[in-house]
Length: 502
Image 1 (spheres, rainbow, N blue to C red):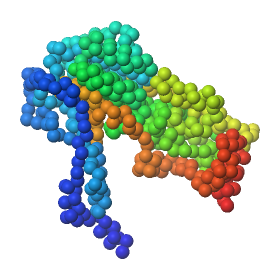
Image 2 (image 1 turned 180 degrees about the vertical axis):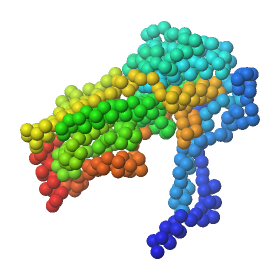
Image 3 (image 1 turned 120 degrees about the horizontal axis):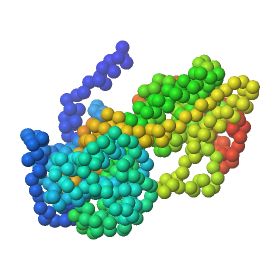
Image 4 (image 1 turned 120 degrees about the vertical axis):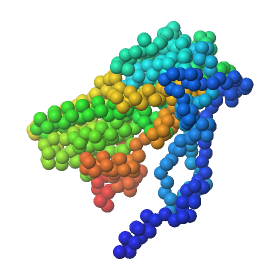
């Protein structure tokens, strides 16, 4: 009874709590504008006033004071973080006044980095939005990523050319990694007369966009720059999600379903699926939750080990004994520290400067076979490995992502026409906002393994938490030093288990 009474009291919010709620300080994040370094720019009425398809009504235009809160969940009773202001961002959408004469706009659109469902939709909607909403007639696509600014001629675009692009996978403008030469890129922007630049790409691309924006601002050029966040991994920070993510999760279901069929159809069959996720496991997590066929999900944010009590092999053996098969999903960035690599491989990087990952799927398949041969000689065992990475990246966006891509593109256009620059459009708590480029480029969206979603994954799969005794590991590390990484699996596990028991 006492516990119930306490719970009821905890659920009550006092009048003072409500008063505190309305006294929370809010900090509106800075949003760069062309007038910050180019004074006395001429303003113009928004041409949407004369657009027969809109007929702007009261409340149509975004007020300068409209803001989107980043944090909307508060713990009220006595724990309000009053000293720390809550962050807010300028709301995205059309403004009553603009800073570009549509007839003088020369827009450039570029896609950089890897492929992602929805790239062509974003390009298409940028073209359509500029053309149909604001009457812009000079729109160009930059081919081959960043290097295309200075190495190829831009391609002229219009609504007729891009009409069916949203039905195609990939990017019609072509893309590449690397090729970032700041001076050459900004010189090309200046020499070709581009005054609006739309850069579509992931975190590495956005970091490049920050440098372009800063150099343009240093030169005091009347050029607005916006970055449109693209990453199939959903690892871009601050925004709710990046485009292409929902399509990727949907497509991942097909790979998981195939792995499940293969595993069920074999004696002691394991279906192993590697999904995208270099630094975050969002695709693996959401695919696991929506599938219902996954027995274990491994992500970069969570450490795991293979041998010994509570390890992956013990869990899979139990699952095979109970069900006769198992399905294992692993994100590409998971377990990288467990995979043996040469000194050269430790330093190897791709054209974007990212550390080259070894194939965790191939490694895990080999380890699974070695484990079974070692512990169950002569018994049947099958591992079916599926890597759908390029199949997922190359498909067109689904209906949800297509709609999202349209809102992203139009939000970017409205912001640029209003004179904002150095920003990223994106949804925060399902409301579109403008965020400083540098803030987004420096923020990661990692899976919170203390969150309810991860607890849900573990409850669905009933997988172990793969946590060893910290005292045992610390002691063994101190004793063995770097040799801990080169000991055989069984020998190392036996020593850790013994220390844990002690």
